[in-house]
Length: 333
Image 1 (tube, rainbow, N blue to C red):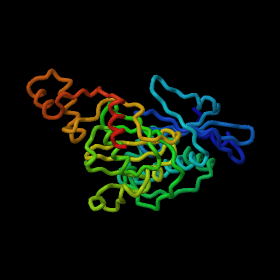
Image 2: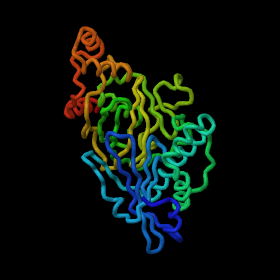
Image 3: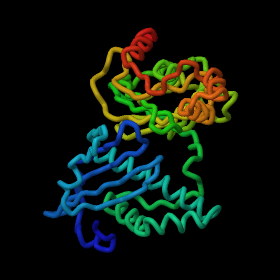
Image 4: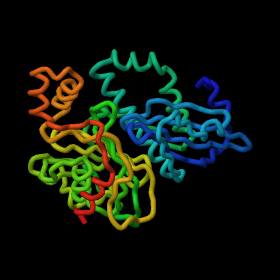
């Protein structure tokens, strides 16, 4: 690993950005933004790990080829190209969330910042150097936690319709419960909710909400102060490039959703893959699901049998059938 003190000596003069990509595992809410930086005849690779919207790690690779060899390690990894503008935008957004989060912890829990710096003492200096290389403006942090709801802002205009591969996973359980879906970018978030309800075997009448970089969207704006109607915004307006993400809440279940790649425009929504059965309707939250899993792992004594009967009679947590999901999605059309 290159020490951060050597970074300024590696590149001199105007920086050219190329070979930008985003990669991530389908079952993890973490992405790696990677690109080649060139100044004159010297090129290096930069790798930015974004975890839960904020920068977590910044690494430099003196040999760019080392960076672009996808390390799968037995896991399914998706990779998609980005334009230099998309790369800069996503890096800048993740740096801002990290800076705001650190500022919030400085005010509310200084020990957390000290602990973070103990593990990655070079991260602030690396973030500053990366900003300069990418030509990003200086930023004065706002003391705001990483999980704070963004303020509603003006939505971007509708872009050309395209197809999207999106990875969606339930936030809590481990191993992950996930689906990969192919959808159109011009569907509304209300239509996306119906697709997600079908993919995860839920009643589409269940209360739901989307949390995006442009604020919250739901069907009941009277319940969520500051939200806008989910039928008035399209998916492509709030996530437009691979690596973009949002949060989807259905009842007390939270899901993360990430764009994996842009593809040709599909006729209808479809499921391309997935793992594990969605929590049964009787499990209203993660705590109920944990109790059910513990009962299924037990020796089926009387208490276990009663809990299984209450929360998930006949439930097989490993069951998943893509064709069944696609039959449900076909009925939405």
